[in-house]
Image (cartoon, rainbow, N blue to C red; front, side, top):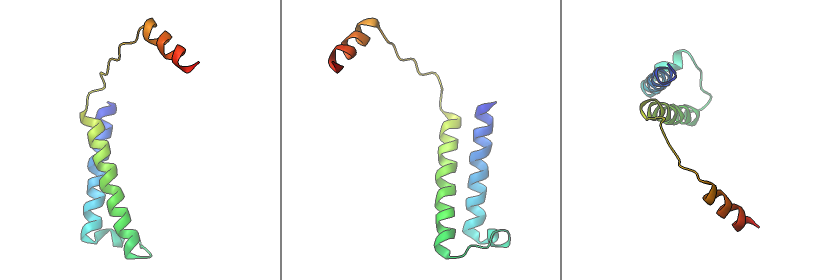
Length: 78
Protein backbone atom coordinates (compact mmCIF):
# COMPACT_ATOMS: atom_id res chain seq x y z
CA UNK A 1 0.00 0.00 0.00
CA UNK A 2 2.91 2.33 0.80
CA UNK A 3 4.31 1.89 -2.71
CA UNK A 4 0.98 2.79 -4.31
CA UNK A 5 0.77 5.99 -2.26
CA UNK A 6 4.30 6.96 -3.33
CA UNK A 7 3.51 6.35 -7.00
CA UNK A 8 0.27 8.36 -6.79
CA UNK A 9 2.14 11.16 -4.99
CA UNK A 10 4.79 11.19 -7.70
CA UNK A 11 2.17 11.43 -10.43
CA UNK A 12 0.44 14.24 -8.52
CA UNK A 13 3.74 16.13 -8.35
CA UNK A 14 4.22 15.69 -12.09
CA UNK A 15 0.67 16.98 -12.62
CA UNK A 16 1.35 20.11 -10.56
CA UNK A 17 4.60 20.62 -12.48
CA UNK A 18 2.68 20.27 -15.75
CA UNK A 19 0.06 22.85 -14.86
CA UNK A 20 2.82 25.12 -13.55
CA UNK A 21 4.63 24.85 -16.87
CA UNK A 22 1.52 25.75 -18.84
CA UNK A 23 0.62 28.63 -16.51
CA UNK A 24 -2.72 27.17 -15.48
CA UNK A 25 -1.66 27.12 -11.82
CA UNK A 26 -1.74 30.94 -11.78
CA UNK A 27 -5.53 30.61 -11.53
CA UNK A 28 -5.06 28.94 -8.13
CA UNK A 29 -1.77 30.27 -6.72
CA UNK A 30 -0.67 33.89 -7.29
CA UNK A 31 3.14 33.74 -7.39
CA UNK A 32 4.93 36.97 -6.43
CA UNK A 33 7.72 36.52 -8.96
CA UNK A 34 8.41 34.34 -12.02
CA UNK A 35 11.45 32.91 -10.20
CA UNK A 36 9.13 31.58 -7.50
CA UNK A 37 7.09 29.84 -10.16
CA UNK A 38 10.23 28.35 -11.73
CA UNK A 39 11.43 27.14 -8.32
CA UNK A 40 8.06 25.56 -7.62
CA UNK A 41 8.22 23.81 -10.99
CA UNK A 42 11.74 22.49 -10.35
CA UNK A 43 10.89 21.27 -6.84
CA UNK A 44 7.73 19.57 -8.12
CA UNK A 45 9.76 17.71 -10.74
CA UNK A 46 12.39 16.65 -8.19
CA UNK A 47 9.80 15.55 -5.63
CA UNK A 48 7.88 13.59 -8.27
CA UNK A 49 11.05 11.89 -9.48
CA UNK A 50 12.06 10.93 -5.94
CA UNK A 51 8.63 9.56 -5.11
CA UNK A 52 8.42 7.53 -8.31
CA UNK A 53 11.92 6.18 -7.74
CA UNK A 54 11.03 5.08 -4.21
CA UNK A 55 7.72 3.67 -5.43
CA UNK A 56 9.28 1.41 -8.03
CA UNK A 57 12.40 0.18 -6.22
CA UNK A 58 12.63 -2.90 -4.03
CA UNK A 59 12.87 -2.59 -0.26
CA UNK A 60 14.67 -5.90 0.14
CA UNK A 61 18.18 -4.85 1.09
CA UNK A 62 19.96 -7.53 3.09
CA UNK A 63 23.18 -6.45 4.73
CA UNK A 64 25.09 -9.29 6.29
CA UNK A 65 26.61 -8.40 9.63
CA UNK A 66 28.87 -10.54 11.74
CA UNK A 67 30.35 -10.37 15.21
CA UNK A 68 33.87 -10.36 13.74
CA UNK A 69 33.11 -7.29 11.67
CA UNK A 70 31.56 -5.52 14.65
CA UNK A 71 34.64 -6.27 16.75
CA UNK A 72 36.91 -5.04 13.97
CA UNK A 73 35.03 -1.73 13.75
CA UNK A 74 35.07 -1.40 17.53
CA UNK A 75 38.84 -1.98 17.69
CA UNK A 76 39.49 0.60 14.97
CA UNK A 77 37.54 3.27 16.84
CA UNK A 78 39.64 2.92 20.01
